[in-house]
Each structure stands twice: as C-alpha cells, then as structure tokens.
Length: 441
Image (cartoon, rainbow, N blue to C red; front, top):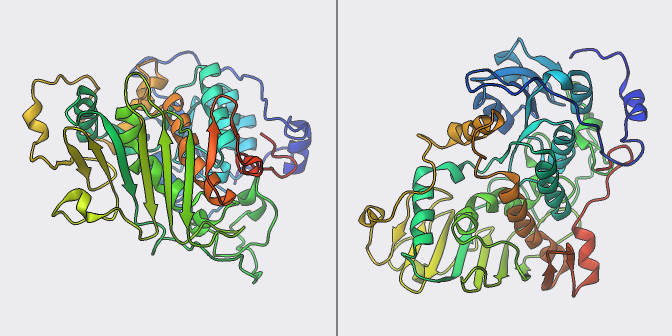
C-alpha cells in the first residue's frame, strides 16, 4: 500500500472527524471535462461487487483504488496496476482529492454514507451501491448533500436502466393498468445467501494479516473479527448491513417507485420471525401504506422475504418466481418475475401492443454497464442519471423504514417532513446510528 507521511491516528486528529462532523471543505477538481475527456475515478471498496463497479467505469481513467482487505481486492488491484492504492478512503481523498473527479462506493452498507458524504463534500461525483445507506437519516443526508454540492450521483440499482423496465414505467404512467392501489414485492434472500436470525459468534480467531479490521469496522462499534462477517456475510448483522430488505428492495421495489412516484409512506407494519439485537430475522412480511399523490390513489405495498411469497392466485396459473413484483390496477395486473426486465400482463396484453404510447425515457443500449455510463455522462455535464440521489435517497428512506418497524416491534406512523416516527417514540433510535469516535457524520 502507498505510504503516507502521517499515520491514521495523526490523520484523524488533524481532520474534522475528531471534531465530530464530516464537514470537509470543498476541494476544487480539474476544470469541467468535455464529453471525450477522461474522468479520474477512485474506487472505494473494490473487492466483490466493487470490482465490477470499477470495471464498468474503466473506459475512464482508474486513478486510485481503496480497500481494507488486500486479499478480497487483489483481482482489482492487479487489473489496474497504474492506480494508486490505499486502505483508508480518508487518507486517499485528503492526499489525492485535487486529482480525483468521481468515486464509486461499494463498501458494506454501514460505510456507504461516511465515504460518499466525505467525497461529495469535497466536490466529487458519486456512484454508490444499493441500499444507498445504512440508516434512514443517512439517506436524507445523502440526497441533501448531493443537491447542495451539485453532484452527479447514481445508486447501483442497475435494473433502473433496463430498457424493458423503462418501457413498463411509460406504460404504467400512461394508464394501461388503470389506478394501481395494491403491490406485492418479494425476494428469496436471505435463504442460502447469508445467515440471519443468529447471534454474535463467540470465537475470536486472529485477524488475517491482509485485512485492516479496524478500518473494516469503520463507524460500527468495536467487536472481535470473525469470518462470519468478512468478506460477504455481514449483510444480516444490524451493525453492518440491512438484511434481505436492504439488499434487494432497492431492486425489487424500483419499478413501483419509478412508475408510481410513491414517495414516503405514512405507515409501516412488520411481521416476522424472532428479531434479535444482532441480526435481521429469518423471514419478514412488511406492509407499507402510501398516501394519494398527484391524483393517484393510495397504495398498499406488501414486502415478503425469507421464503415468504404472495399468493399464487395473484398471478393465476403462473408459478411465483424467486424475486419479483406484482402491480394490481383497476384495468389490469402486471407481474414482473424478476427485479428488472419484461413483465406479464394478466389480461394477455403485451408491451408491444401499446405502440401508440410514446417513449419518453432515455434508452441506453444495455443496462448494467450503461447504468454506470449514465452517471459518467452526468459527471461530464450531461443529463442527470435517473437513479440520482434525489430519487434514490427517498426510496432508500422508505425501504429502510421496514427495518425500523421490524426492530421497533410494531406499526410505525411516519412523519417524513420531520424525519420521525410519531407513535412509537422508541422507534426513532433506529433511524440513525451512533458512530464510533472519530467517524461521526
């Protein structure tokens, strides 16, 4: 790893982290680039999914790479030998900030906001993986900061860029389903993906020499290392992840938020297997109530995970898939048996039957790499990427309220304007996290 003239403790002392606020001054980047000039991009968290996020923007200049786990990130480090290497994103941004135009953030959930907010407050464009944040409060901060700093942003729910998804959005908004007032959304997670409904491991094996465990913990409370967390199975642990809901709802619910402009729910109610203080439950069924908006009727949306699914009667003779969404309207029902792509109208209609309905949304030629390309184009002054933080922030707030209801153990009534639960005071403690000293956001 690149050496730095100060150690991490000295670094923290001389930055505003020690003062308890992530309020870095704006750092001017290079002049606005033309469409054919290359951005200098830094990747934060470049093992696993982070490696593919970097690969999807490597038509630009991969300037710096940061990861706390040398083994997990080895493939990405080897692929881009010219990139400067770091373990601590704070050191990277402080040292190289003037040379970096944009960053990708692909860390575990609990480090999304700390990394992205620091970058945005320094004037860097940000692509951040889903769920956008670990907490509801962070999601509000992310949207507000991107807006204030005029940052080009995009959340990593790549199905948002799928041409078939965008066509369904146009058809739904044109009224082919009629008024939609009921939605069912589900995922096969966490079964066979990562553990939930478990307690903290008791063993304390040694930390691998290639992992900086303290940096991996970041904002999270201190605890001993265990391979149950790193590199992937952290998702079920409340201190690090957001469970099945956080992992998949920003995919599976996207069509509903995109087409119906759902906004904030008024209430959220959860049923589940036992919820403990360490991990998300084995399964959950969560009901969201959304109010009427812009002439559209109220919507009830039900989320299922951990093997729970909606009734097969809702899709007639079709088998219910592992992941999907059903939108029930007064004219027709749409079943999409995945978290992006083509759907099935239960009336027998097909998307191509509606040629008279104009295409209004941009059509990238693909969807995964081109979801990143939308963001890159926005970084260079093009149109906003469509899953920018003004869209992704409010959707993430709504998604994560499901976890608040799970942990609070009752129905919550939501005051979005004031960012608080109004009926269960104790639920408000789950809206934000208490960060370790030196990591306050």
